[in-house]
Length: 169
Image 1 (cartoon, rainbow, N blue to C red):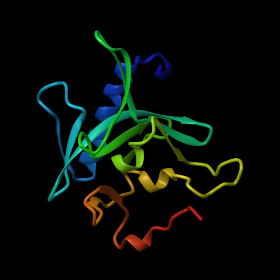
Image 2: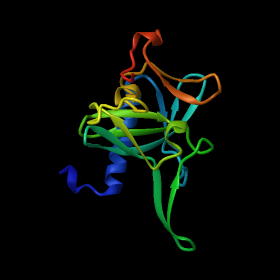
Image 3: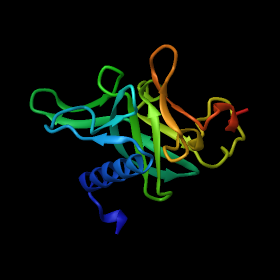
Image 4: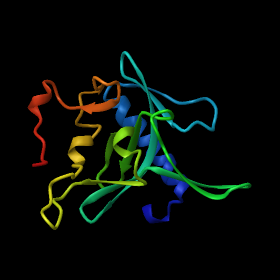
């Protein structure tokens, strides 16, 4: 039945799954009371509130594909395609139904593109430079959402952070 879901239904399912995954991890999850925000959820991570934009993520050719832009029709400007930036959201979270996994990507990683591919399988050309590995962004595998020294939100691995290896060479 998954192929029959409308984009709105997929978005609703993704939002519910992301909220449920975060709640199971112990985050306080909130929702805006009014419509029209660029974010869908708020995660209380202790000393900070993070604005979360929820997306349906697809598994294609060994990678989880997260679309990081919005499309809408405007009466004045016609069809608009827009990206998110750090003034509007902190994290793009994607739910991949095929893997039953939630991924959390800091907005600075995704803000300059319309689609981000998170590899679950090695690329066919064996290229490892500039590859974003899905396991590095799994919400279920992170101990906490933290901040970099320059203030940008980012995903932090287990404690200590050196206990998780990176697949990128």
